[in-house]
Amino acid sequence: MVQTRPAYDTVSVGSLEFWAKTPEEREERFRILRDERPVSWQRPAEGSMLPQEDGAGFWAVTRHADIQTVSKNPKDFCSGQGVMIEDVPPDILEAASSFLAMDAPRHTQLRKLVSAAFTPKQVKRIDEQIKDQARRITDELIEVGDCDFVDQVARKLPMWTIYEMCGLPAERRSDAAHAADGMVSWSDEDVRQGKEPAELLNDSLITLINIGIDLAEDRRAHPRDDLMTNLVQAEVDGVKLTDEDIAAFFVLLSVAGNDTTRNTITRTLEALTRFPDQRKILQADYEGTIGVAIEEFVRWASPVMTFKRVATRDVELQGQQIREGDWVVMYYASGNRDERAFADPYTFDVRRTPNQHVGFGGGGPHFCMGNVLAKTQLRALFDQLLHRVPDLQGGEPVQVVGNFVDGVKSMPCTLNL
Image (cartoon, rainbow, N blue to C red):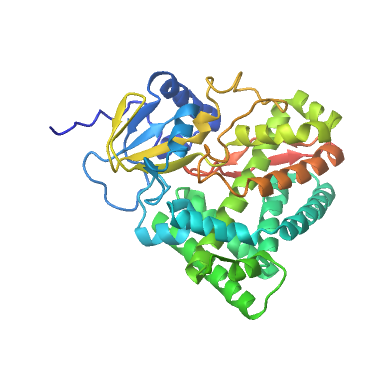
């Protein structure tokens, strides 16, 4: 007997119209789905680059607990067939996703190799550099005065940190960061600037791959004390990374390391402006509260909004019959506002504990390995901002239209010094 598909849900969370809304406006639909249909059948996402079969779609998973279930069960919900809601060509998928779109044992092996490059010495050196760069960024902000917070502050520290770690020459960093933006913002008309989505995505990917391969080749010939040198020399059980592995990881670093932290910084200033009592708590006892507060920064921002998995067998989730091969999309932005997991989820609370947010993923083998680095950047930058520019206020953000990263194009800020 052929199993029939359910009707497409009347509450759409896949259209560009939906992603053009603010996070608060999107939450109106998420709340309905969490309460009434936590696993819903949705129309194919707008922006897919390959033809869609009749009846195609995906399952939207909106509750916190179900997101954890999908994340922690890679045997039932695999990553190797892609992590984006749109259907993209396989060659782009392979070159762009690194170990995000891999399953064991290849995922385990590659993750071990990359982890071997993050030595204690490397992390310690990065920590001191991040603190120094946060000071310099704040110096420049004070000198410039009222400005666009994204350009002047939020984008600078993540870009500098990632490319300084890799040893990327200063003259290539702007091109790499611009290409990283194109990798996650190709649905946005302003970002595309007349290009077709596939063209922008492909151009951005090629730019990052070429930069990554050039840098790897240079470090093989001229080793230095940086992450790229560690990557080309890394070896686990006699296995080294290939040029393709390194280029794909450079793409991943550029996207995950730049966009996610940048937007968390921006959304956090927005939250501190809306909730001034929380700013005062941090300023009164920064060292005592920042560790817990950073988790709330990430929960509130939910910088990565969605991740796809593919069912490896017929399974049931929240009463829905999911077929082998079906796409199952975790909505982290919804899970981080789930009333079942968080008391008063619409309040920004820097002392919230426990705080089992899914901002770094819902657990399992793909939990974000860059989470410590991101926390280090957030700690260093807000230490400077909250103490040296204590009345810094964020204005109305202008956001990117997209379904992967909650991107903010610009946000005015006033210093009130």
